[in-house]
Image 1: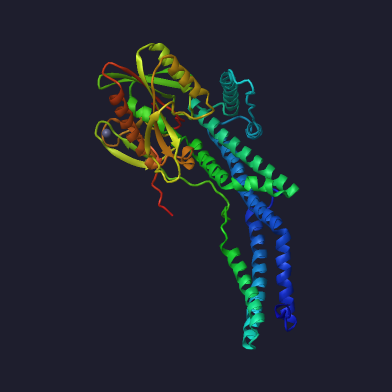
Image 2: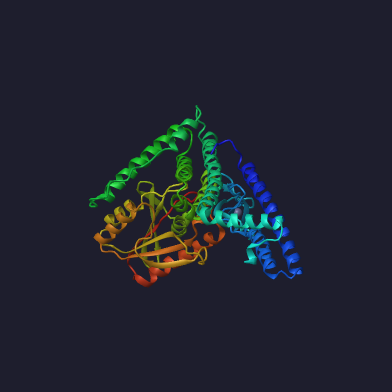
Length: 134
Length: 367
Ligand SMILES: [Zn+2]
């Protein structure tokens, strides 16, 4: 594969071809069903049966193409954005403060001055915020 | 037979098409299947390539930001991403752990030196993080190259069995790759990861007690708990490092010959689907992952000193191990601390000495 093709464009082309094929199959299936009903009207039961089988299998094929399980999603993988929060606590006045993570933070780091008293605040926890389930 | 006697032209065309499709499918079903699978592999390959490139850029950016090198680190990073390790031959297995251990030591030494050259102005802890970041990029690169290999081989031979092999494990590989891509964020910023739960438990047990270096990148401190002397070891933070827990345990047991009556290891463990993230399980044996060298050392030392080994496992999924620490796992460390304390109370008596080792990567966790 060439490194230059963008993944989205490639996927879209494939989609377009699939869509065209689906439309053709769908049209043929419709015609077939129509002929089936016509034959049924002429009391040609066997012919009608055959056309209806062809027509329905066409629709089944389209349905399968739509709903088949896809092992990988189409969207390109991106590194997730993480919402990480740091909790600081002051051992002297028990002030608790939560802020966004900054580079250089680590658990048990204690060099941030307390905003309420003279003490130093200790980082007691760093973790991602609870994610809202999709 | 009237079934084969269509009454007009359109009917004929339709029937021919239908029969034709049937025959095509009869003979080419496998080929069509192979092509579908190849397409899915190709899609995955594109994603992996994107992630690998992102890993490389992240590494270069971070080195430029933190290390402030005088020259462009790109060629060095590219060279690093191709680094490989040959495992020792295991036909004659006696002593193979030692051989693997020394190879791993050389690998570590080489990586440290490389990072030192790439990022001369970084602090030691930042260097450790860069090293971990580079290792994650290296892993992504290997994933990319192996999958590309199978993809191209499958395309060349159109052999369904070759294609199937890689197609079957694609979802699992994707999961692992996603995990490594989250590791990029964590190591770039120096955030604690899922694997840091062991060191966090150790740090919580230490609770600010004084520590000293007992092995390479390993520290240990002592606390008293319910009349027992508890020695706690962990990797030296807050840089990303797993240290040498095997050496630390061996040294500590040798120092306290005959005194230690119990060894507890705390580590992250893979959960099965359906288990909750942050579940705690207690067991016996040495809870420690990795290539097996450190586990071997711990088991050897425990056997020599005849010390029973207990283990506390904190369950997490593959997607959590190297990703920034999630809240349920952070909460689980408190439960693990009480679990360790429970084990100590249940299986030791007053006056005993107990050794607790918090195993895992200590990125973003001090002591
Ligand atoms: Zn305060």
